[in-house]
Length: 296
Ligand SMILES: C[C@](O)(C(=O)O)[C@H](CC(=O)O)C(=O)O
Ligand SMILES: [Mg+2]
Image (cartoon, rainbow, N blue to C red):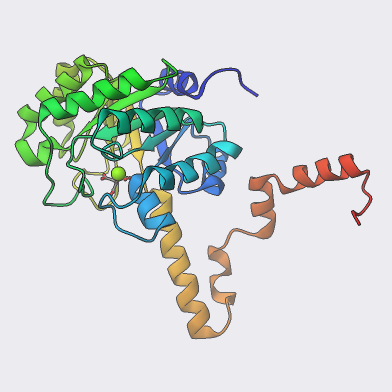
């Protein structure tokens, strides 16, 4: 067990890798898979909670409790630092944002990002986004900074303003957020590497690039992002999208063929599953406690 807080572990990971690859884990099982693959930080996507846990769109429908349930399940089994998407903070007032921050820290998260969209938010890569004033966004950041019960808990301010007000206004907002105490800036839906360079030069804090598939941002490589000075590369839903496609193929094939034989190669084996969730280690603990005797 580590004595560091989750926030401290996130900050350490940022020092160890640049850009830090932060990969989406839709549930506790995926968190363990990401850990095995060597990632140093993981992400709980708001769009992922909405679509994956609730089967609903990323339109500000899910609540803080929905997110906390998934956070707790992940942090219960995986000690990788977890960045959490809190959308617009789950409520209009500073008290709501304080509650969000304190709860996330209690539930073992390491970091969050909070955005400047209006409460009835949209996916950052969809048209029709609306944003609150820069002043209101700065108030969100101040409320989050003030609520931190662990000073190492990492606060990322996301701006959706590039698509709404243009690059210069977005950079001005980001700078205001950094001045208000945000540890880093999430420049949502950037169209090119130069955008990151301009943000980086202006804000003076680390920058996160959202490399989500089928969106507005090209799928830049880590080398490209490094060359643009980006500190964090986020892959929010990559494994989720692949998992959904695999599930769809399995359902369709089983229904059509009356057997799953054709899709076995798509499946993780029983042995692989047991390996990733530590099944045998759990079993050995049980045997040690009860000396191998079956429980009556
Ligand atoms: C990062 C994001 O906020 C998320 O919820 O994962 C989404 C990702 C996506 O929809 O691809 C976003 O960019 O708005
Ligand atoms: Mg989101």
